[in-house]
Image (cartoon, rainbow over all chains, first blue to last red):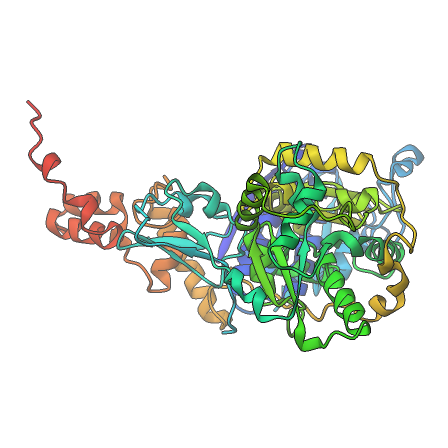
Length: 136
Length: 456
C-alpha cells in the first residue's frame, strides 16, 4: 500500500501526524510492537527534522506484509557532510540551543539505531532525502 | 481465546436500543444488532462509560450475592476510603463503621492501609534508571486493560506491583491467620466503586487468582448502610472510634493526583477520564515524551470519586475526602498502622506477573491476510459517507468497514449505501428495510401511527 503525506516546514503542532498514521496501520497488521515503536521513533525524528529545518517535504510510505519503507523528501538547506551528521553528538546547533536540550547531535544516529536500513542523501541548497526501511 | 470476565452486563428487557453506549465506548466495543447492543468481550475494558450514559439504566453490574459473606465464619470487609465520603457530612465515620459491623462483618479495614508500604516501592522504581520510563501505574484496572488492547507497545511500562487492594488483602489474611483463624474461615470482601475493579478480581491480570473472595457493589452497600443509620438499628461501637487511621496521602490516593503526591523524585503526571488518557497514550506512543518518570492514569473523571458505583456526586465526594485528609498527619507510625510492621513480608508478595498485550487493532493473525484486509478497509471507508451516524449499528464508518471485511456486517447496512443502490435499482425499498430491521429490530420500523401519518 502506498501513501503520501505533505509536511510544512515550521509546523511543529502537526509534526508526528504521519508517524501516528503509520503506527495505526502497523498495529492493524499485527506487527510486533517493538518494531512499531522503532519505526515510529525513527519516522517521528525524520518528520521533525523537516519541520525544523526544511521549507516543506513529502513523506512516501510503502507498506506490505514484509516491511515498511518510508521516504522523506524535503526542499531545504540540505546537509553538507552527511558522514559527519551521522556521528553521534555532531551538531550545528548553537550553545544556547543545546542548553535547551535541542541539537544534541542524536537525531540521525537515533534514526539509524531505530531502522533496519537507513539512507540519507542530500544536495546543499536543494534538499535532503531520508529513506527508512524496517522489516517485520 | 482466553476468557475475560466483564462486570458490565446488559438488561435487554430495559434496553430501548438507543445506541448511546455504542457511541461513547472508548474502545469501540459495542455495536447494534436486532435492536440490541452487542458487547465484544475482547475489546471491552470495563470502564463503565456505557453504564453512565445509558438513559434506561439497562446496563447493570454483575456482582456477588451479598449473603455469601455469611458462608464465612470470619467475613472481612475492605472498604475504599472514598466509601465514607459518599454520605452527607453529618453522618459520622463512627456511625458508618458501626453500621457495617451491624451487617455481620467481623473486621473492617480501609483498602488504602497498604499505601504507606506501596509508596516506598514506587519511589524506588521511579529512581531506578534501568526501568522503562515512564512507569505507568497499574492501580486502575480499566487503564491496564486499555493499554493491553489499545496500546500494546506500552505494556512494558506498566508498574508490575499489586495495587493497594491486593496488598491489604494479603496482609489481613496473614495477620488473621497468625491470630489463629483458619484460612478457610476467612472471607475477604471488597466494596467496589467501579466495574473495572470487579472485573479485575474475577479475572485478574498478571495473577493466577485474586486475593479477594467476593465483591460488593458500593452503591448497594451505601444504600444498605444508610438505611441502617437512618433507622438507628445499630449499636454505636465504642472500641473503634474511627476507621483505622490512615496517613494524609493514603486518604488522597484514589483521587486524581493522589498517587503522585507521594513520589518525591522525577517528573510525574496525573491524568483522569478515559478519553483524556487515550489521547495522552496516543501521544506517548508517537513521540518520545522525554523525561516523564511516572504516569498516574485513571479511567474515571475525578478518579475513584467518579466511579460508576459511587452514590455521591464526584466533586462533593472528592471535596469531603480532601477535608478528611487535611486532618491527618503526613506519616503514620507502625503503632497506628500495623501494616508497616509487615513491610518485608509484603515486599516479598507484591509482584505482579506478566501483563500480556492483546491488541484489538490487529485485523488478522496472518500478516498477509491482515494486509489484504487493511486495503479493503481503506477502500470501503473511502466510499462510506464518514458521517458516523451509527444507523448501520457501528460506532463509525470505519468500524463498519472493518466489520464488513471480517464478514460480520453487510455494507448495505449503511443508510447512504442503500440510497445509492436504490438509485441504480440494485436494492428495493423492502430489501433496504429488511437490512435496517436486522440492525434495529422490527419495532422501531413498524409504527402504525407514523405509517398513517397525515402529512397534508
